[in-house]
Length: 233
Image 1 (cartoon, rainbow, N blue to C red):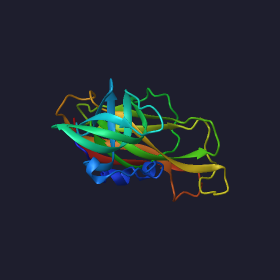
Image 2 (cartoon, rainbow, N blue to C red):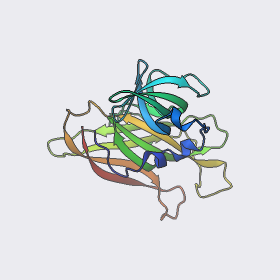
Image 3 (tube, rainbow, N blue to C red):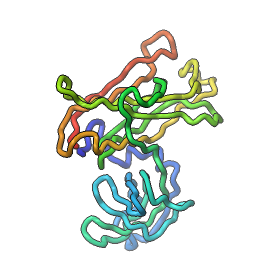
């Protein structure tokens, strides 16, 4: 897939994550690139970036074992080029974003609670987004986030992706009330789109979500937002 809409440098997209990661110093002649941060997908211990580059992890300096399956955000030192498209890396830290398949429209069973997209992009067969939402301070409630899709039809050539959020009742009455026991939080979510349409298909894509309406008199009133772009599968 091609990267598109609101695409920024990956380093700026991952700034919230970087602020939480420890910094490590290395001799310059030990590495090709220091502090690389990128999304990878792990399959049976093989780590591949969205650009198709394979990372061979030869050293783990993270505080826990690195998963061998699933979607990851890695902060690494690129140590050595093994061959074209294959590099040895030292992992400094990692995070596991929400990663799942989208579901057909109407099948997620989720509520339509507000969440916002701060930035989003397509890469490596994934729709990736940095999302914002309100969470209750010191709450154990785990919010549910899904993406619903509607495929193009003979009368509509657009692929629709509707983000769905179920806060399980854990929502502020007034998000502008700074004395309330709710805080604005950010989280990364990735939805795997490969297989939805045949390879090399180019379609318009419309992303939809629901967030608070700053123009409304009611502080918890929401409205629908959307963004349209194009995608090549």
